[in-house]
Structure formats: structure tokens, C-alpha cells
Image 1: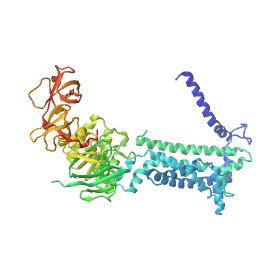
Image 2: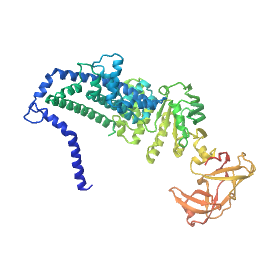
Image 3: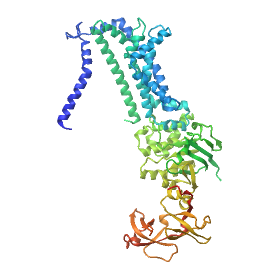
Image 4: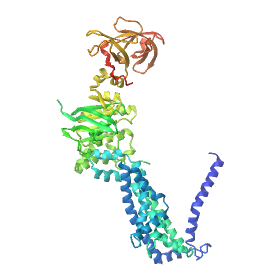
Length: 264
Length: 363
């Protein structure tokens, strides 16, 4: 590659990264800014973090979000795994249609699902609360789990399952000893995706949560409406770091597993 | 007489509307090394998979060691398979792979450790017990796949083109090792391959399959020397196939006419005058000389080409009508010859084989 081209591409790459990450960096920096007005740097402080942790509203919302995310992850991972295995393994009438139906939640606008759920709840006379957020999240997250897992299953050699049966493992043992360990990285990735989708989902949560039970994104939205406070910056910084941390751990572990299998 | 270890009776398997295997009857004796040989799509792998239990026959019955296995799941059959792609479990070590079958049978820990060690020693990979299979070479993975199967001491070992992915030299070496192993263990081997040389080298008995049916079964030399059909003659080894008409069908003297030439043929009494037939003669059975000898059944051809292939020289001749003929000879014969020179060919009629022309449709 010519020197000029290299330089141009390098600068272009830098600009793309700047575009991606400068807003987030600014947000993180200003979470330590000793000023009520977010736009001028006046000094370093941990005040906003301290105030954040003494704000019971935010703590409650964080726990609500975590609760919903954990429940969503468990349900959608189990459902998604079962669905993906079925879709991968068996031929049945309408299989393509069923497969397509699972993709729909990925592509339809959140707002459509949110309104649809709201209408359903009012039709069934369900009282809105924290739990009413979960079905909406499960719908989204399950689709993503299926997507991720089908990709993993496509790379799974069916002969491995046959080999297990050939060596005397019945269906049950074959699944636990061979199939599951082999698709485990896919399940983990799917679960992680489900967790993060649920954690930062706003539209469905906003529509289907009951009064008084906010999730974190919904609370942030209502706080921001009164102006961006440095507390929000602090909260966002913690969220970003937490997510990066989790993904780094999972990525590291999966990398290690792949290395052990000798695939890398 | 050894009793039958595996028995297939009128077994058919359909995929969609086409028969992969059609009305197959086959008895495999205890301790036998039997090879299913045929081109791809001939039904040999399907037959093996039906014995293993991965495919259910549409018709017919299979017995393994006297037990009818129609309703027996693969994991309850006393057979083990060595898969074409090895199919070693990538998340387990070599030792764990080999131990898998024994663990499933709930064999005691000490017993497992002992037998795994023995099996790995048998395939000379005892030092690799703690490695992951993907870290090993193709040949090593192949040996582990074999160890993983034989450690269970199965009644029958099924091998599905197990050497297909190896390079030629390693394949030759593994052929001998496998044969040796089979003799040592006295185990029944059913071996699937499309490599005729491999089949001839290793087998006690060969079953040649084509389009879901058995073309011929017999000892390797029988198959080679006395092919039962044109397909077998053509598929096994190299041969010259001549098409012609029977001229004389006397018990003592039979000839056929082929492109203006009269050729003596072995008289098996199955042919009548004027019947259209194929004749097959192996290149190494044809004697080539530069001068006409005294023999009967002497044909002349012109030298078209010679190809040096190491042990022998392949001599390609052409009859006056354009029909090509391949013979194996030594280089010395051709010392005085150049292309276009006259050559004299001769063979014993008994070395040739004649087939009816019912297979006209095939190429």
C-alpha cells in the first residue's frame, strides 16, 4: 500500500473512532466535574457519585432493571435455546414460517410491540407493574438468542452427536455431554445479548411499566426532561464500565475456551 | 464354519423416491474384514449407517450377533463406528474421548483408566492422552478415532472411509496397521471405501456395490481376476474392454469378432453364436513383442504411446480400426520401437473375461 493511502486511511479510522467515542468520553469526564452546569470544567469531584448512591430513586430503578434483565435473560435463554435446537434439528411442516416468525421481533419497531402489549394488557385487565415489562423484553431477547445460537449450531458437526450415540450415550447424555458443551459459547453470547438488550431497553419498558416502578432508562428519561444533571453522567459512566467489564470477562473466557478446543 | 455376525435380509432404504439401497442381502462372518466398495452414491455408506442404526431401513431386517436390531437404538447396539471426519469431541482431551464409551457403560474408574491406556498404547499415542484432539495431526486424530471405537470391544467395528483424508503415504501405512489390528483383535470389521486398491489390500472379502445393489462379492483375487460384470471389471483396476460378437461357441474353441479381429475367448458355455458381448483383459495379462511369435490369439497393433510409470511401462497401442489397447510391459521390448511401429499382442484366452451385453445402457 502506498504511504499516502496508508496515512489517509489511518486518519479516517481515527475520525471514525472519535465520532464513536468522544461523546462518551466527554460524558465520563464531566461526571467528575465540580459544577452543576454540565458544560464548563471547574474542578474534580466525586460528589455526583456520592449523591448517586444516596439517591434511593436511582438505586431502586437500578435494582428494578437488574431484576427484569435477570428474569428476561433466564427465560429467553432457555426458550431461545430450545427453539434454536428444534429449528436446527428437526424438519417439520411450516418450519420456514416458524423460523421467520422468530425473526419478526428483531425487525419490527419497538413502539409497535410496546403499544400492542399495552393494548393486550388493558384488554386482559392486567394491572401494570414491574413484571409486565418482562414479556416484552423476553420477546425481543428470545429472537436474538435464537439468531446467535442458530449461527453456532450451523457450525456444529452433527456427526459429533452421532459419535456420542455410537459410543453408547442416549439422547439425554448426548445432549448434556456433547451438544450442550459445544454450543455453550453460543448460549453464553445469547444470554449476554439478552441481558444487555433488557437492561437498556426503553420504549417497551416506558409503555408497559406500572406507576412507581421505573426501570433505569425510564428514570433517566424522566430526569433528563428536567435537564441533564451530572448525576446522570455519573450513572451512565458506571453503566458503561459495568457493561464493558462483563463483556471483557465473557470475551476473555470464550477466547480461552476456543483456544482449548484448538480452533484459534 | 464361522457364524454370521451381521446379516442383512432384503434391506432397502429410500431417500425421497430413489433407492439408496435396494433389496440388499449380505452375511458378514465373525472376525471377517469385509469391505463395501463402490463409487460415491452407490449406497455403501447408507448400508453402514443402517448397521450402526443411524438410518432405519424402509424394508428388510438386520441382525447383529443373532439379534434383530430394527428397534434397537444406535446407543444400544454393540457396534462402534470410526467416522470419516473422525468426529472427535473437541471439548474433551484425547483420553476423555477414548473413555467416553466406557463411561457411558458405567465401567469402573480404574478399569476405564487401564483400558484407555491400553487402547492408546495400541495406536501408539499414549503420550498424547492429555492433549485436545484439534492439536493433533490428521493421522493422529484418525488413530484416536480408532482407539475410541475399539476400546469398547465392540462385536463389529464399522469404518466409514476412515483414511480418506490422509495423504497417500500415511494412508498406505494406516492400511497395513488397520489390517494388523483387525487380525490381532479378531474383531469383525466392516469397511467402506471407494478406493479399490485399499479394498484389495485389506479385505478378506469385498462387496462391490453400484446404484444401491451388490454387483459382486468375493475374495479380492476373485473380484480382480474374475469380475462378474462389466461394471466390476471397469471399476476394479485398469482393464481393456472390447465390444464384439460371438463367432464360435464350441465347448473347446470360442471366438469373438471385434472390429475385424478374431479373438479367442474363454468358453464358459453361457454364450451363443452372434450374441453381442464385452470382453475384458487386464493390461498386465497382455504380452507385447516387436516380432510375431507362434502363439494363437496373436493380434497386431501400432504403437501409439508409452508411459513410464515406474515398475512397468504402460504401452498404448491402436488396432487398425482405431480401438485403443493398453498393455503393461518392460521397457526393453520397446527399445527398438518408435511410435507408429507394429507391435504384436498376445494373451491367454483364460485370462480374459466375457460379459453379456445387458449393461448396454451404462458407460
